[in-house]
Length: 290
Image (cartoon, rainbow, N blue to C red; front, side, top):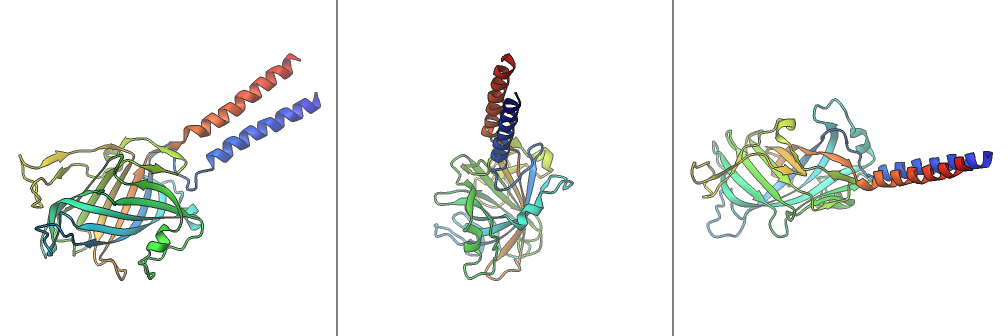
């Protein structure tokens, strides 16, 4: 009887360990009972496109944003709970390329404008985790090597759905905090160890959700022509505030951004743990019958 009890306890320990090891397989820990806010800083540039009618004095259709990012904090929305300590040993960085598909943002003093962004062919938003932190936006590769030399954590290429807008409502992008960028996206590759629940992020985050498609690409909203949108049910929501100068040589812009996700453990975590407990229950039943 003592030996059977010992085997039963060993089995229980194994089941708990199996469930715990699966649950801890996530390289970066996120909240699972509330929305997670990942605060990051990115550095970016814009490259003028070659499309007919491209304005060299403005950001417009065909232009491309490229940049890198580094997650600096992981909290809940209020900031009352903080998981940022793990970033000292597991770096979370990213690399992105976005295309301007409509709109106009003049780069002149006093100007305001609107851009519609998309993930065109070859565009991407990739996030990486790295257990040997080496983030360095001033390196010879403008930090791209250091931002992408980890393991792929999340990839967004637009196949599952993406929409982005940039609205400049104050003086110009060449004065502080004048540009608000918002991105709604579904994840195409998910190696986080979590499932992301599609969510309407507007109300819980308090971010502005109303936006529009600039049909005639003039940088302003035209009633009856442009198309209004509200919130989108998506896996991930980004909200950015753009600053210039960036403070880093080689980059024109810096933005300080939160990205929001509503994460739950992958079903496999519960299934494995549950199957272990079922097996132990059957073993216990046989033992007590004897």
